[in-house]
Image (tube, rainbow, N blue to C red; front, side, top):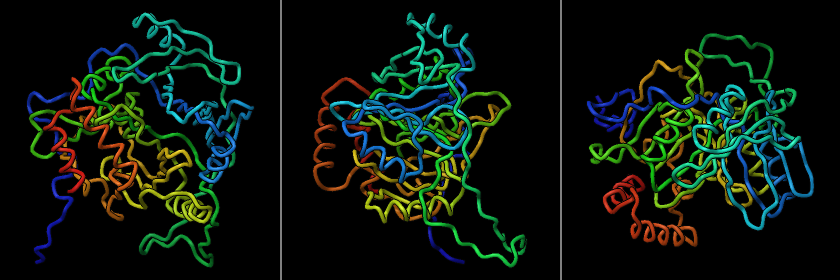
Length: 377
């Protein structure tokens, strides 16, 4: 018998909540959104943004002097909207409501006004602001872009189950064709307040909670949150929230057909000089096969495939947060992915931590010790 210690021991979150811990949902939310619709950014150079987007696997659905809409192959709205701005910034997510009645209901409950979206998108929207200051848009009845030809998954011979004969595997080294937007990850200094806001206003439910090792009694510091569509399974997480020293975008994720399209697409990005952050591997929470890249403005984006789908019958899992717990297999998480890469980025992060500790929020010295322990685990 080997005495090798498995670093994943105890990190899978099939373990449930203890008495008195957060239930991961509310009983009577204002509405229940159905999915993410799109993400909105501002960038000064739309040409550079579009070149990367095509290499990453998007196609352009709208291009003007001041606006760029990027889509996947699935039927529906564009995945990403980019407007020309003086600096690069994440503006916020847009969630899709079941119908316009829910948009109006949410507007009435929050004292906001529902308004028509531009004709290029169509439909109705209400703009909210979460406790961290992020603009959150909820939309309905937007125009649907027709589906485009998708990348076909390869046919696999699994073990002795041989279904492919007299045919070789030769995946083309080309951009992975993005199918759809999967999720966005947001960091906040007001994690618990922000979490409860999303559960209450948008009817989201928690799939998994993470807590700092040795600090479970203080509550979770990260949650993977899905849409509640009853018995219809949805992505393990549409939104992930994490406690941290600043309110900021962490990354967004886009589904591709399979591992080969993800890997060949990554080689295409590498050959064209784009910055690889971390991967390829398979996550624990959500189970996705992942590969992380940075766009020319430094925003982290993820290709993923084969993610978990849950209906509303599953209660949240609980697990300690560790860097070794980010993947079931794959290379160790990089310093770039963890945000601790030496250089200007690390100095900015240090200043951010110092400023956060001076303010009244959830990120205190004990939480900082927990975060440092995670980064070095």
